[in-house]
Length: 462
Ligand SMILES: Cc1cc2nc3c(=O)[nH]c(=O)nc-3n(C[C@H](O)[C@H](O)[C@H](O)COP(=O)(O)OP(=O)(O)OC[C@H]3O[C@@H](n4cnc5c(N)ncnc54)[C@H](O)[C@@H]3O)c2cc1C
Ligand SMILES: NC(=O)c1ccc[n+]([C@@H]2O[C@H](COP(=O)([O-])OP(=O)(O)OC[C@H]3O[C@@H](n4cnc5c(N)ncnc54)[C@H](O)[C@@H]3O)[C@@H](O)[C@H]2O)c1
Image (cartoon, rainbow, N blue to C red; front, top):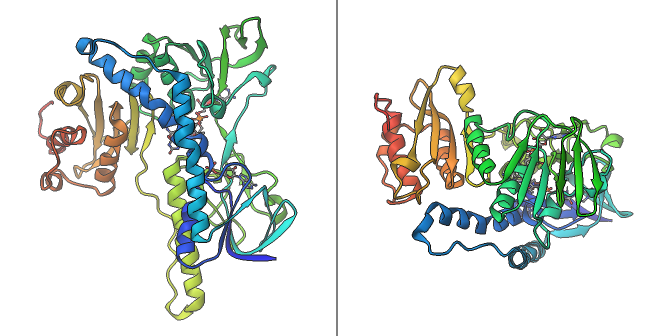
């Protein structure tokens, strides 16, 4: 039987960062993957999503600049799809080469934990000292009549031609990000939310601003509607809700969330606890079995299930295993195994424009009595922000004049929020920011200049 120091079940970000770090630390490592090497983000999530969205972002920029351009171009979806395959498909091959070169074994097939030191793949057993469960999540599908006509995000990002009428069920990240693309493409878009909200975790005034904008661009939002059934019609599909709303459409994306892959991997047999939200772990990301960790989307966790959080957990587990191994070698100088401590985590909805946030939600900061300040940087710095006059940031100042949290609405929010993450995490003061020089003109320097003044909390409105 082949023996390893660490076996990872899954090969996404929750797994491979640790696999690389442990291999560099001379550990013998294997990644087990039943689908595509490198997991969701690389092949079917963040990477293809942002590639497909890129040209629509350029269109949006051009539209904002109006008649400065003589012609408004259109996106050729077939060519964009070809470009996606050209760029995204080789990524897994590149990683496979890198992993093999490093000496990481890649085992194809469905991994099942047989006992605490054995993982079985398609009838072959592999021995190991540690196991990391990093099996991620899969799309949830509604259990309704006609569910066979529903598609998920993976299907959407593989569409060969773009539908003229498209319907998204769910009001989360996937629905609203893809609805942004579809509306820019010129399709008639419907979004069905079973609650009275969309993008629930985000700053709701900005979500409303986005919904109003999308609404003007052919996106119709239907709130408090439960999907009842889907029927095939002569021209496409008819989606009917429990209240009787009927929508004729060419394509339906079910984006009602993702569910953790906890089945058929040996959890019950080993007594590893899990819930509907995922595998339960302690503060060291250990399951109830002392050599079996879990990482990434498959975790039952309160923090957002994102690529950077999966990567953070993966790196943390690598360090835990290295420390445990070092302590075995030298128990006298045993290293302290610190519990995981997450820093400020930014979230971004890659809509057109983006909505981003970090730190304490503004609504919570308001309740705590923190000072809430708004910077209308798009209006104030129109020359720099490509005429995006409605771009703005709201932030909360705690009583020590540190930024406790921020939310941004605007095209550059995905990058600007990283600057704010730094400021929030490091509890930077206006004085410290003032001691630094930033390149100008740039999206971040504008916002930083305005922020420094506002952080001083002198009574002026910018
Ligand atoms: C459409 C979409 C867009 C997204 N956009 C973003 C974004 O912009 N930013 C962001 O931060 N996050 C985004 N995410 C979320 C991000 O993709 C996940 O948080 C991230 O991929 C989690 O990594 P992971 O390694 O935990 O899981 P995954 O990447 O899902 O990897 C798990 C792997 O385990 C494999 N597996 C499962 N069971 C077994 C088994 N028994 N044996 C062997 N292999 C198994 C699976 O095939 C899979 O490849 C997006 C997700 C989707 C679906
Ligand atoms: N920009 C990003 O970081 C990004 C982008 C895409 C996906 N993701 C990740 O992928 C996950 C999945 O995305 P998602 O948009 O599918 O999930 P989500 O959790 O963001 O949204 C799911 C939506 O479906 C609704 N819903 C749930 N059950 C329903 C039901 N029975 N009927 C109707 N509606 C229902 C919810 O109210 C919610 O609006 C996200 O939670 C996130 O972790 C992140």
